[in-house]
Length: 358
Image (cartoon, rainbow, N blue to C red):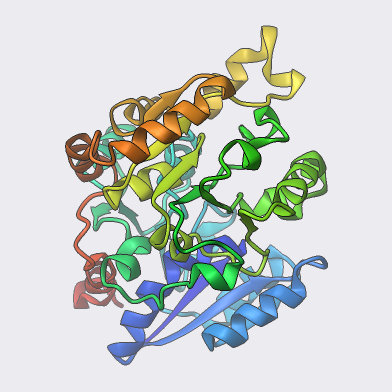
Protein backbone atom coordinates (compact mmCIF):
# COMPACT_ATOMS: atom_id res chain seq x y z
CA UNK A 1 0.00 0.00 0.00
CA UNK A 2 1.22 3.52 -0.81
CA UNK A 3 -0.06 6.95 0.22
CA UNK A 4 1.17 10.22 -1.30
CA UNK A 5 0.86 13.73 0.16
CA UNK A 6 0.53 16.65 -2.26
CA UNK A 7 2.42 19.64 -0.81
CA UNK A 8 1.23 22.54 -2.95
CA UNK A 9 2.62 24.94 -0.35
CA UNK A 10 5.18 24.33 2.38
CA UNK A 11 2.76 25.43 5.08
CA UNK A 12 0.62 22.34 4.39
CA UNK A 13 3.24 20.16 6.05
CA UNK A 14 2.26 20.72 9.72
CA UNK A 15 -1.16 19.20 8.93
CA UNK A 16 0.36 16.24 7.08
CA UNK A 17 3.32 15.29 9.27
CA UNK A 18 1.44 13.85 12.28
CA UNK A 19 -0.56 11.59 9.94
CA UNK A 20 2.54 10.62 7.97
CA UNK A 21 4.38 9.58 11.13
CA UNK A 22 1.45 7.44 12.28
CA UNK A 23 1.24 5.77 8.87
CA UNK A 24 4.96 4.96 8.96
CA UNK A 25 4.49 3.41 12.41
CA UNK A 26 1.87 1.16 10.84
CA UNK A 27 4.24 0.09 8.08
CA UNK A 28 2.68 2.11 5.24
CA UNK A 29 4.87 3.42 2.40
CA UNK A 30 4.43 7.17 1.96
CA UNK A 31 5.79 9.94 -0.24
CA UNK A 32 5.56 13.69 -0.62
CA UNK A 33 5.17 15.69 -3.81
CA UNK A 34 6.57 19.23 -3.59
CA UNK A 35 6.49 21.94 -6.25
CA UNK A 36 9.48 23.89 -7.52
CA UNK A 37 9.62 27.51 -6.48
CA UNK A 38 12.64 29.51 -7.58
CA UNK A 39 12.60 31.61 -4.40
CA UNK A 40 11.99 28.70 -2.03
CA UNK A 41 13.82 25.70 -3.50
CA UNK A 42 16.62 25.93 -0.93
CA UNK A 43 14.14 26.11 1.95
CA UNK A 44 12.09 23.21 0.59
CA UNK A 45 15.19 21.03 0.33
CA UNK A 46 16.24 22.01 3.86
CA UNK A 47 12.83 20.95 5.20
CA UNK A 48 12.87 17.67 3.26
CA UNK A 49 16.28 16.87 4.74
CA UNK A 50 15.38 17.97 8.27
CA UNK A 51 12.18 15.92 8.34
CA UNK A 52 13.80 13.01 6.43
CA UNK A 53 10.93 12.88 3.97
CA UNK A 54 10.72 10.58 0.93
CA UNK A 55 10.04 13.36 -1.55
CA UNK A 56 9.80 14.24 -5.22
CA UNK A 57 9.91 17.84 -6.45
CA UNK A 58 7.95 18.58 -9.64
CA UNK A 59 7.73 21.67 -11.85
CA UNK A 60 3.96 21.95 -12.26
CA UNK A 61 0.62 20.43 -11.36
CA UNK A 62 0.60 18.62 -14.72
CA UNK A 63 3.83 16.87 -13.75
CA UNK A 64 2.34 15.93 -10.40
CA UNK A 65 -0.77 14.59 -12.10
CA UNK A 66 1.38 12.52 -14.48
CA UNK A 67 3.24 11.09 -11.48
CA UNK A 68 -0.02 10.11 -9.77
CA UNK A 69 -1.22 8.41 -12.97
CA UNK A 70 2.01 6.43 -13.24
CA UNK A 71 2.39 5.53 -9.56
CA UNK A 72 -1.28 4.65 -8.96
CA UNK A 73 -1.02 5.04 -5.17
CA UNK A 74 -3.89 3.81 -3.03
CA UNK A 75 -4.46 7.37 -1.74
CA UNK A 76 -3.39 10.90 -2.64
CA UNK A 77 -3.92 13.41 0.15
CA UNK A 78 -4.46 17.07 -0.71
CA UNK A 79 -4.55 20.25 1.34
CA UNK A 80 -6.70 22.16 -1.15
CA UNK A 81 -8.88 21.64 -4.21
CA UNK A 82 -7.14 20.50 -7.40
CA UNK A 83 -8.25 20.28 -11.04
CA UNK A 84 -8.66 17.02 -12.96
CA UNK A 85 -9.32 15.01 -9.84
CA UNK A 86 -11.47 12.62 -11.87
CA UNK A 87 -8.28 11.47 -13.67
CA UNK A 88 -6.72 10.49 -10.33
CA UNK A 89 -9.91 8.69 -9.36
CA UNK A 90 -9.42 6.28 -12.26
CA UNK A 91 -6.61 4.64 -10.28
CA UNK A 92 -6.50 6.08 -6.74
CA UNK A 93 -8.64 7.39 -3.93
CA UNK A 94 -8.25 10.95 -2.72
CA UNK A 95 -8.54 12.66 0.64
CA UNK A 96 -8.75 16.33 1.57
CA UNK A 97 -7.13 17.57 4.76
CA UNK A 98 -7.77 21.29 4.59
CA UNK A 99 -4.58 23.10 5.59
CA UNK A 100 -6.37 25.41 8.05
CA UNK A 101 -9.54 25.78 10.11
CA UNK A 102 -9.88 29.52 9.67
CA UNK A 103 -12.94 31.68 8.92
CA UNK A 104 -12.41 32.14 5.18
CA UNK A 105 -15.17 30.97 2.84
CA UNK A 106 -12.68 28.84 0.90
CA UNK A 107 -12.87 26.34 3.78
CA UNK A 108 -16.26 25.27 2.42
CA UNK A 109 -15.82 26.18 -1.26
CA UNK A 110 -12.99 23.69 -1.83
CA UNK A 111 -15.43 20.79 -1.50
CA UNK A 112 -17.16 21.77 -4.74
CA UNK A 113 -14.65 19.36 -6.27
CA UNK A 114 -15.34 16.27 -4.17
CA UNK A 115 -12.57 13.96 -3.01
CA UNK A 116 -13.19 10.34 -2.01
CA UNK A 117 -13.23 11.49 1.59
CA UNK A 118 -12.77 14.82 3.33
CA UNK A 119 -11.51 14.92 6.89
CA UNK A 120 -13.44 17.48 8.92
CA UNK A 121 -12.96 19.24 12.26
CA UNK A 122 -15.99 19.24 14.54
CA UNK A 123 -19.73 18.61 14.31
CA UNK A 124 -20.61 22.17 13.28
CA UNK A 125 -18.49 22.04 10.14
CA UNK A 126 -19.52 18.47 9.41
CA UNK A 127 -23.18 19.51 9.42
CA UNK A 128 -22.56 22.55 7.23
CA UNK A 129 -20.61 20.56 4.65
CA UNK A 130 -23.26 17.85 4.52
CA UNK A 131 -25.86 20.54 3.92
CA UNK A 132 -23.82 22.11 1.12
CA UNK A 133 -22.61 18.89 -0.51
CA UNK A 134 -25.02 16.03 0.34
CA UNK A 135 -23.11 13.66 -1.97
CA UNK A 136 -19.83 14.22 -0.15
CA UNK A 137 -18.11 11.78 2.19
CA UNK A 138 -17.12 13.79 5.27
CA UNK A 139 -15.59 12.30 8.40
CA UNK A 140 -15.10 14.25 11.63
CA UNK A 141 -11.66 13.30 12.95
CA UNK A 142 -10.57 16.55 14.61
CA UNK A 143 -7.58 18.69 13.62
CA UNK A 144 -4.50 16.50 13.21
CA UNK A 145 -2.13 19.47 13.09
CA UNK A 146 -2.55 19.97 16.86
CA UNK A 147 -1.63 16.39 17.84
CA UNK A 148 2.12 17.02 18.38
CA UNK A 149 1.50 19.92 20.73
CA UNK A 150 -1.20 18.04 22.69
CA UNK A 151 1.15 15.06 22.99
CA UNK A 152 4.15 17.21 23.99
CA UNK A 153 6.15 15.98 21.02
CA UNK A 154 8.08 19.22 20.56
CA UNK A 155 11.45 20.06 22.01
CA UNK A 156 10.54 23.39 23.59
CA UNK A 157 12.25 26.39 22.01
CA UNK A 158 14.53 28.23 24.40
CA UNK A 159 13.52 31.90 24.35
CA UNK A 160 17.14 32.86 24.97
CA UNK A 161 18.11 31.16 21.71
CA UNK A 162 15.78 33.59 19.94
CA UNK A 163 17.41 36.56 21.65
CA UNK A 164 14.40 37.01 23.93
CA UNK A 165 14.08 37.34 27.71
CA UNK A 166 12.82 34.17 29.47
CA UNK A 167 11.58 36.32 32.34
CA UNK A 168 9.12 38.23 30.18
CA UNK A 169 5.68 37.02 29.02
CA UNK A 170 5.64 36.19 25.32
CA UNK A 171 3.23 37.48 22.68
CA UNK A 172 2.85 35.68 19.35
CA UNK A 173 1.68 37.88 16.48
CA UNK A 174 0.51 35.56 13.69
CA UNK A 175 -1.45 37.52 11.06
CA UNK A 176 -2.72 36.12 7.79
CA UNK A 177 -1.60 37.56 4.44
CA UNK A 178 -5.00 38.88 3.31
CA UNK A 179 -7.05 40.43 4.73
CA UNK A 180 -4.23 41.33 7.12
CA UNK A 181 -3.89 43.66 10.09
CA UNK A 182 -0.15 44.27 9.53
CA UNK A 183 -0.69 47.47 7.54
CA UNK A 184 -2.80 48.96 10.35
CA UNK A 185 -0.18 48.46 13.08
CA UNK A 186 2.03 51.36 14.16
CA UNK A 187 5.76 51.33 13.51
CA UNK A 188 6.30 51.61 17.26
CA UNK A 189 4.34 48.43 18.04
CA UNK A 190 7.31 46.62 19.71
CA UNK A 191 8.29 49.63 21.81
CA UNK A 192 4.71 50.04 23.01
CA UNK A 193 4.89 46.50 24.40
CA UNK A 194 8.51 46.52 25.50
CA UNK A 195 7.69 44.62 28.71
CA UNK A 196 6.84 41.59 26.53
CA UNK A 197 8.70 39.31 24.17
CA UNK A 198 7.13 39.48 20.71
CA UNK A 199 7.40 36.63 18.22
CA UNK A 200 6.38 37.59 14.68
CA UNK A 201 5.11 34.59 12.72
CA UNK A 202 3.24 35.95 9.68
CA UNK A 203 1.61 33.84 6.99
CA UNK A 204 4.08 32.24 4.58
CA UNK A 205 2.89 34.48 1.72
CA UNK A 206 3.61 37.66 3.71
CA UNK A 207 7.27 36.65 3.73
CA UNK A 208 7.58 35.24 0.20
CA UNK A 209 5.25 37.04 -2.23
CA UNK A 210 6.40 40.29 -3.86
CA UNK A 211 2.89 41.75 -3.72
CA UNK A 212 3.24 41.90 0.09
CA UNK A 213 6.47 43.90 0.01
CA UNK A 214 5.08 46.57 2.35
CA UNK A 215 4.23 43.91 4.92
CA UNK A 216 7.78 42.56 4.62
CA UNK A 217 9.24 46.03 5.18
CA UNK A 218 7.20 46.53 8.35
CA UNK A 219 8.07 43.07 9.67
CA UNK A 220 11.77 43.66 9.01
CA UNK A 221 11.57 46.98 10.85
CA UNK A 222 9.97 45.37 13.90
CA UNK A 223 12.39 42.45 13.76
CA UNK A 224 15.29 44.78 14.52
CA UNK A 225 13.95 45.55 18.02
CA UNK A 226 15.52 43.86 21.05
CA UNK A 227 12.26 42.34 22.29
CA UNK A 228 11.24 40.89 18.90
CA UNK A 229 11.98 37.68 17.03
CA UNK A 230 10.94 37.47 13.37
CA UNK A 231 10.50 33.85 12.30
CA UNK A 232 12.52 32.77 9.28
CA UNK A 233 10.89 31.45 6.11
CA UNK A 234 12.33 28.03 6.91
CA UNK A 235 10.46 28.07 10.24
CA UNK A 236 7.26 27.16 8.45
CA UNK A 237 5.50 25.57 11.43
CA UNK A 238 3.54 27.81 13.80
CA UNK A 239 3.09 25.15 16.49
CA UNK A 240 6.52 25.38 18.21
CA UNK A 241 5.94 29.12 18.65
CA UNK A 242 2.43 28.56 19.95
CA UNK A 243 3.84 26.19 22.56
CA UNK A 244 6.08 28.86 24.13
CA UNK A 245 3.71 31.83 23.84
CA UNK A 246 1.37 33.19 26.50
CA UNK A 247 -0.93 35.23 24.24
CA UNK A 248 -1.78 35.15 20.54
CA UNK A 249 -2.48 38.29 18.52
CA UNK A 250 -4.04 37.59 15.12
CA UNK A 251 -6.71 38.63 12.61
CA UNK A 252 -8.66 36.56 10.06
CA UNK A 253 -6.41 33.57 10.64
CA UNK A 254 -6.89 29.92 11.46
CA UNK A 255 -4.33 30.54 14.22
CA UNK A 256 -7.09 31.99 16.43
CA UNK A 257 -9.00 28.70 16.50
CA UNK A 258 -5.75 26.75 16.90
CA UNK A 259 -4.43 28.79 19.84
CA UNK A 260 -7.88 28.86 21.42
CA UNK A 261 -7.94 25.05 21.25
CA UNK A 262 -4.93 25.15 23.60
CA UNK A 263 -7.07 27.18 26.01
CA UNK A 264 -4.73 30.17 25.91
CA UNK A 265 -5.82 33.85 25.61
CA UNK A 266 -6.26 35.42 22.18
CA UNK A 267 -6.53 39.03 21.02
CA UNK A 268 -8.46 39.32 17.76
CA UNK A 269 -7.50 42.29 15.58
CA UNK A 270 -10.72 42.89 13.70
CA UNK A 271 -9.21 45.59 11.48
CA UNK A 272 -7.52 45.14 8.14
CA UNK A 273 -5.57 46.92 5.45
CA UNK A 274 -7.78 46.33 2.41
CA UNK A 275 -7.02 46.82 -1.27
CA UNK A 276 -9.19 49.44 -2.99
CA UNK A 277 -10.92 46.58 -4.84
CA UNK A 278 -12.30 45.43 -1.46
CA UNK A 279 -13.43 48.86 -0.19
CA UNK A 280 -16.42 51.12 -0.78
CA UNK A 281 -18.68 49.74 -3.50
CA UNK A 282 -16.56 46.58 -3.55
CA UNK A 283 -16.82 45.83 0.16
CA UNK A 284 -19.04 42.87 -0.70
CA UNK A 285 -15.89 41.08 -1.93
CA UNK A 286 -14.39 41.34 1.53
CA UNK A 287 -17.54 39.89 3.06
CA UNK A 288 -17.55 37.08 0.51
CA UNK A 289 -13.95 36.20 1.35
CA UNK A 290 -14.82 35.67 5.02
CA UNK A 291 -17.29 33.06 6.22
CA UNK A 292 -19.84 33.51 9.00
CA UNK A 293 -17.63 31.23 11.15
CA UNK A 294 -15.65 34.37 11.95
CA UNK A 295 -18.47 35.26 14.36
CA UNK A 296 -17.15 32.51 16.63
CA UNK A 297 -14.09 34.68 17.25
CA UNK A 298 -16.20 36.96 19.47
CA UNK A 299 -16.74 34.55 22.38
CA UNK A 300 -13.22 33.06 22.34
CA UNK A 301 -11.03 36.14 21.84
CA UNK A 302 -10.65 39.67 23.16
CA UNK A 303 -12.10 41.71 20.30
CA UNK A 304 -10.26 44.85 19.13
CA UNK A 305 -11.78 46.93 16.33
CA UNK A 306 -8.81 49.30 15.82
CA UNK A 307 -5.14 49.45 16.69
CA UNK A 308 -5.88 51.99 19.43
CA UNK A 309 -7.34 49.25 21.62
CA UNK A 310 -4.60 46.67 21.09
CA UNK A 311 -2.21 47.52 23.91
CA UNK A 312 -4.99 47.67 26.50
CA UNK A 313 -6.42 44.36 25.26
CA UNK A 314 -3.05 42.59 25.52
CA UNK A 315 -2.55 43.74 29.09
CA UNK A 316 -6.12 42.75 29.96
CA UNK A 317 -5.75 39.14 28.82
CA UNK A 318 -2.31 38.80 30.39
CA UNK A 319 -3.87 39.80 33.72
CA UNK A 320 -6.92 37.56 33.18
CA UNK A 321 -5.73 34.53 31.17
CA UNK A 322 -8.85 32.46 31.99
CA UNK A 323 -11.30 35.17 30.93
CA UNK A 324 -12.54 33.24 27.86
CA UNK A 325 -11.50 29.77 28.97
CA UNK A 326 -14.93 28.14 29.16
CA UNK A 327 -16.07 29.63 25.86
CA UNK A 328 -12.89 28.39 24.20
CA UNK A 329 -13.55 24.84 25.34
CA UNK A 330 -17.11 24.93 23.99
CA UNK A 331 -16.28 26.55 20.62
CA UNK A 332 -13.22 24.34 20.09
CA UNK A 333 -15.44 21.26 20.21
CA UNK A 334 -17.59 22.80 17.47
CA UNK A 335 -14.89 24.12 15.14
CA UNK A 336 -11.81 21.99 15.79
CA UNK A 337 -13.41 18.79 17.05
CA UNK A 338 -11.77 16.56 19.62
CA UNK A 339 -8.47 17.87 20.97
CA UNK A 340 -7.16 14.63 22.42
CA UNK A 341 -3.94 14.01 20.49
CA UNK A 342 -5.54 11.13 18.57
CA UNK A 343 -6.76 12.91 15.43
CA UNK A 344 -3.96 11.45 13.30
CA UNK A 345 -4.86 7.95 14.47
CA UNK A 346 -8.46 8.49 13.39
CA UNK A 347 -7.32 9.68 9.94
CA UNK A 348 -5.15 6.56 9.59
CA UNK A 349 -8.03 4.33 10.67
CA UNK A 350 -10.20 5.70 7.84
CA UNK A 351 -7.44 5.39 5.25
CA UNK A 352 -6.59 1.84 6.21
CA UNK A 353 -10.04 0.36 6.62
CA UNK A 354 -10.20 -2.67 4.36
CA UNK A 355 -13.43 -1.55 2.71
CA UNK A 356 -11.77 1.74 1.77
CA UNK A 357 -8.90 0.09 -0.06
CA UNK A 358 -9.29 -1.61 -3.40
